[in-house]
Length: 205
Image 1 (cartoon, one colour):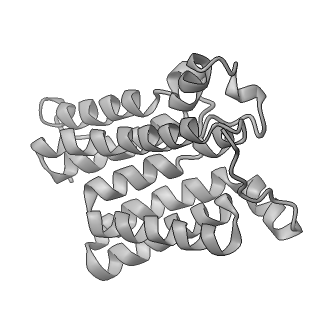
Image 2 (image 1 turned 135 degrees about the vertical axis):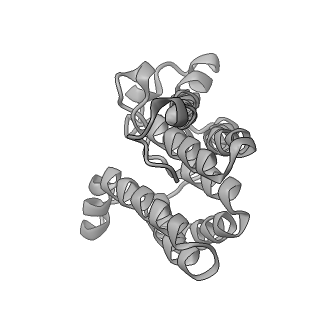
């Protein structure tokens, strides 16, 4: 990856990839879908978060699934488009999309926790790593019924998987992402330790 403080004529495309990824990642699909469905502001429901898990609390499983796919899709799309200009571009665009979801420009930098977007980015960067992370999420969610615990496990296993079957560079990138996701889940971690975290419950709609 080039030094991003180098000659501007050389590095500006990398800045452009990161900014474009950020803007794409900033699209708040959870908020948009629930408003279109007439459910009001998702930020005033449940945990107040715009992620798919909170959309699920409305009882509309279809909307939650759509939010999950779109949040993951925007991360994957950012990577796949930028990949045409090289792997470094793809990584920067993916990181931009991830940060955009966490700190969206349109919502005064108050966004989601980045799990679905992270999974989309991982699948696009290296499908093997993404698959391992997704399967980890599904297994932990099935066994323990905690979405937050599943998310923490999924992003936590990604750097280890990268170290073993991908590259150390990608392992470092996924480690930084995992740390940010864990930091965003600090309240969930506290509730898990206290046995107060809400379990996954499927609605009837």
